[in-house]
Image (cartoon, rainbow, N blue to C red; front, side, top):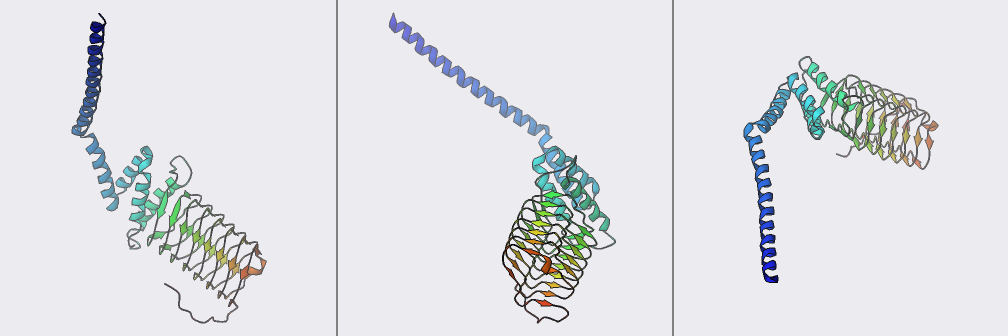
Length: 298
């Protein structure tokens, strides 16, 4: 009697295992069928085609492509950085003033719409503007993760007032064609302006840099205003040429400040700055005396 019960139990367990396997296989087959139907229905292909077509139109200077990408970005946050990068790429080519200036303004305005906190704000975006040509760029109040403007040409008036950069910011070798303002800008990490050219006035009033700040080998043709600026970490101003007046009223240097071999051609109040640590002025010149020509490192 016991052997009959054990035999029935054994076959029952086997039947249960087979049933579970059939259920799992059937579920897997259903998922595969659904996936195949979605692919053969063309839905995935349509989305991919819309993405590619929008990028093609963007490259051709068609505003419809730009608007399509913006709509996709609003719906799918994972694609936002790719869209921002594509818009930046459209501004990294050459510029023919009077021909594509309006298109460049259109691209810049689209970026501002998504970089400035508001209904269409895209958080955590990085800007890649290396060697780009930008016209009257206005990023006031924008928030980005990182900003790369190395060797960019910024024509007209440029505004970075109250901008927040949570990562590194790089403006090495950039050229500002006219007025540029960084009033109350916050750089949560390093900010580098090495070898940057400021043709017009440059205003950094109230700017704050929490990591290393570098202005070495930069050139200021107009006024340079650093009043109320705060440099939490080391600040490098080596071999800078201030062609106009240089204002450092109330500027705070939390650590070392290096002004070695810098030339203040115009009037300056750098002595009114607050130095929390060492300040070096070896070889610094004040007034109209022409400094010796030096070869800059590449």
